[in-house]
Image (tube, rainbow, N blue to C red):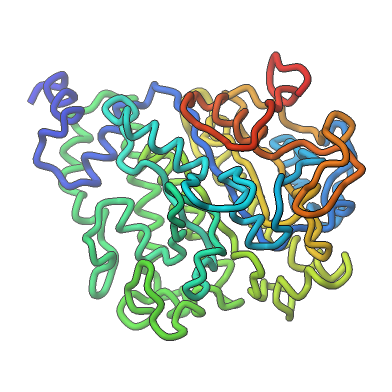
Length: 443
């Protein structure tokens, strides 16, 4: 088949190839098309704002506070936003989780989170966007009984479970069966290898390089998923029974045991990076834990929620671990080549949490920062205090604050517009955050 005919057939999906081969071929063909992705990362139980936010100004030579000290290594990729609040009643963990990506003030009725709204728009234009999933909800340690109030993603009022089992998520995203995993090993790439080898000889040099990059990344990822060095916790044949959204006894606990938490986090990050890089979706919500999360992170001996209700030093011991994971996430995106730079350059990252101050249960000074987004115009390397520019004496989750605050949905709306979306609606938005973007002034 001539190259031009081959490209047309791939674009039309008319070739008899495995789903993964078709997906990667389409992504390789779009090698010169720059697309902005969005990644919303949740971390649990708020913070202590005074030891979370760096002093306002440039971050290049700033000394980061204790809670965010792991982020010092990626300071030039960050924008801290101090003074962000969640509007409305319910100054609870679950109330904040509901608000953080939907923008609703209280009830979830009819609510859709921002990544779901973005996904709808992309799906409507999938012939040009090339995506195979409207949006992706995933995370680490997100399976917590049947309590749907501990989720951040919603589709018309229905909560969406973020999948935290990489053996199930990877085949779902990259062309596996409905059962999620094979009896013994995950072999999505192996099934597509013959098709991919044939395609590689017929593509142009740029497209071939892009295809080879995807294949190499997935090869490493599958080897990691199937490796015996993972201590048996993710052994496909003997460990946790395959499941998507059903609880089987207490088996979900193996996915957030302290000794495997870092390993699962790394694998889930790799899946997320590959998903965004391959163009499976442009919009993703990634949860680290859940509201009231009792996860005992490495380096501590007490559950995260209990630590958040002690003093700042105690809460810092767990918060630094979550921030270290986010730092690694950022570094992986920065190390992944993409059009006009890195995948990080083409991704706007936004962090959210369920509370502002974890011990006060308020919704003021949410631990929010942005990262990446260079090709979307985000000006990084600084910390911005928005309190002098915000509204005063406003109810941020049942607590009246005499300090100024800015509605977090203004941040979400700005991100959506900078990423090229036009149909996103945040119910409580009343402005934009323009002063952290190229050619932007004021709020």
